[in-house]
Length: 400
Figure 1 (cartoon, rainbow, N blue to C red):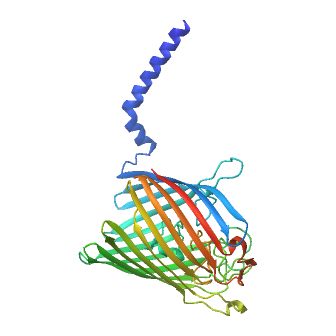
Figure 2: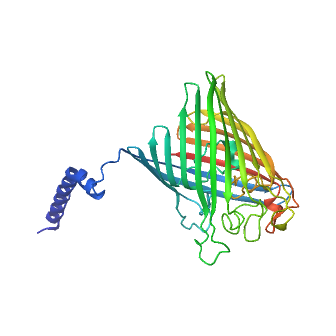
């Protein structure tokens, strides 16, 4: 038999096999899923962002320049009144960022579980969820005094969204979030008490005029065993709170947060006026036998004009932030403001443009100052890149 005849027979066999696979593909799919054909919808999506990040030491000669990327990709499966969400992301395992610095001699980069949770719509207005989830509380940009926007907490949450009439709606969000399993890293911890956050938020949204909406909420976050074991383990993610060398908070925390947004239009331009106020009602200056300074209060106010979402749209914003040392937990607050953490104040500005529906270009600038440079956090002084800093970010974001 000639080589040409063998090749022809091979091609014919391959074509026949392809037809068989094509006609039987649905049954193959059912078998591969174990016959689980009850999924109503399956949606995939994600984004990739390229960033140039410059951190400037104010008044100094040392700058830090990084080229960074962020990749997020996931799916949401809906099964009647149940939803399963799974998302992977780049990064280093940080709770506050999926950024991966382009370094390491072109080495491969890691992927992490960014979200993995189940949500059950128990009733028309009630949703119960658990796992590593998107933040269950209602938040704005100004809310990053308490929660970094990239933070995906773990635990359980309950959400109630109750429309009262055409102009008024009430909502309630609650969550029980374990932050530290004291035996997870092995060894013999000083205490067997895990650290938890119990949060409750109640709010209302109302239509004042045809295109003017006001939303307001008050939340209470109670921290349990936060002075017994470290929240994130030593060393802390961000410089800020008064802590021991082992990363344990010196003062107790119970944070009350008030969040407001007034949304309206100035002609064709959408405007969002935002404000958040936080205070640690359990702050103790003499906790742990240490004379603590730094204060318990913080706030952030600002405005966003426009929305860079659809092709050809623009967006601009300005915010001012003031966050005393023990106002919120540094390991959860925004890590882009200065070099992250608390004991800071300053200005945030950005402008963004969408050349396509799925592409956004953004320039963002931070001007930050330390409130009290005499304070230290477990030996980390508020100097150098932990001190007064300016920060420039240039982003290209593509959604898919």
